[in-house]
Image (cartoon, rainbow, N blue to C red; front, top):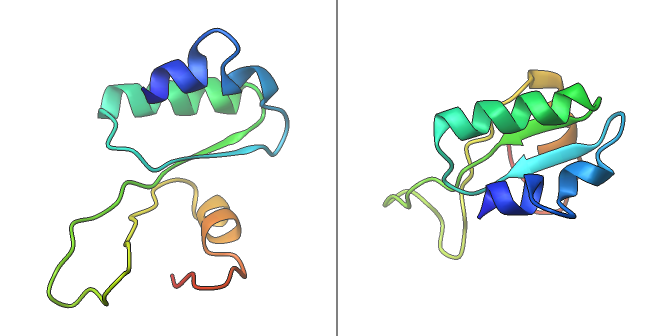
Length: 88
């Protein structure tokens, strides 16, 4: 699904420009993630892989935990920026 949305006809990749941020919150194969990141970065954008992590006993109720992976400066600026309810 992510591949179709990102790279398919009229995909998001067509709109990516310098400093665009694409955050993939799906469970995507590593080979696909690398391809997506390469394609986005070739257009000057940034790609962050941020799949949802399993709930644990320590996870507060009604909370979704993501594990963002990507360049540190992009993750902290784009994912962990000053957004209400975001903890990094």
